[in-house]
Length: 271
Image (cartoon, rainbow, N blue to C red):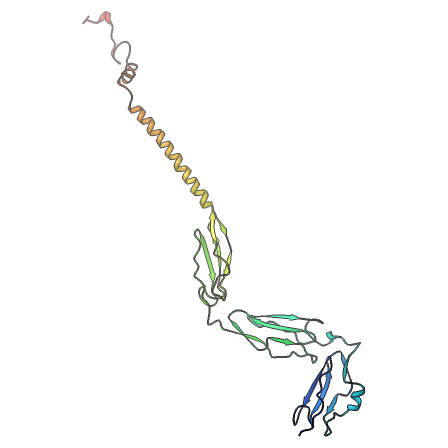
């Protein structure tokens, strides 16, 4: 039966690192205590499990257990880690409780749709001034792109698109404009999302086309009215009575006879 020693635990604001030759906390096991930055170790740093089942320095630790006390003069901002940046095609989100990229700062990484994160999702600035974890990068899966429905230019408008990975695929962007005399109604730009949908509904071109139609209709009505009046006037002229026509001819005849012929009864030989 192996000789065991009491199980040890890390002090508050500290760490415990042990090596076990024959089993956890058995004869020959050694343990080391350390404290986080800003704290000072109170008590022995090194303990070893002896053959009688006790830890070395037990007499001392029973009187003063190992603990970590805060150092009054310590500032966390004194320990800095290298500044991190977002990976290409990715994003970086950090929290800095004691200062930008100092001890205790935590940074998380994420990638844009269509890319996969390689490395650590989160990294912490350690007391050594280095970051825990591995460097993060975003590897593209853009070769497997998502298609969005094909867009057309709106009626009375224009469509302009850019396609980084293929026509109307993930991350394609399209902008719209309207012809002169028409008003743009709706979004000016749409983007093809990773879900295969456009971020907005396509816009419309409206406005002056309605006024033009109204004016055209009014012009047709006015033209029709004028034509009807002219036709009525011509019709009225064509239906005049014979008496009216004779009266009109008499008004054009001279009282002295037929137009252009001089007559005098005194000299007329026929009389």
